[in-house]
Length: 166
Image 1: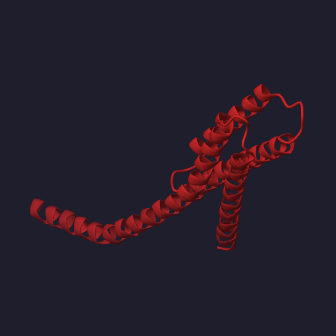
Image 2: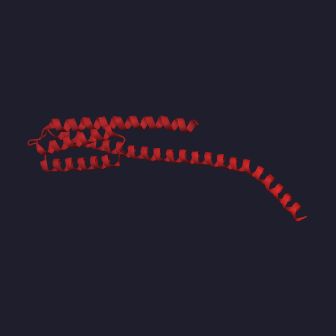
Image 3: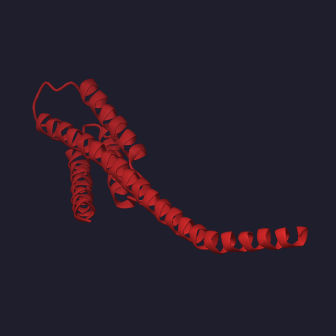
């Protein structure tokens, strides 16, 4: 009698195993799809953060571009204060430097343009009398950086449209 009970228990266990195997496989595939969805969500959040950093950098570069244009308009006028010009240039370089730090490292061309702009502003400060050519070059490099940042923003907008239509 006790042998028959163990056979019955063994048969019940076998049936449960047969039923449990497909359920376990289904749960594994369900977990896999949830992990993939989570990875996509994290990737999207990181892209949005990167876009925000680039947007902030673009705003900062535009403001420094404006500052350099103001300096260029003052260069040929009499009565300019060289100390104020030097302080403004140092401020511009400080802001560009913080912009370089905030830009993700894969944007090498943008960072190179910003570094060249900083070098030209430093050269402008070091020349006596001031040489407008360095300031014009710095303005051009900042303009290049602005255009590249705007292009990256357009590329992100295309990506976000693609995400929204999925």
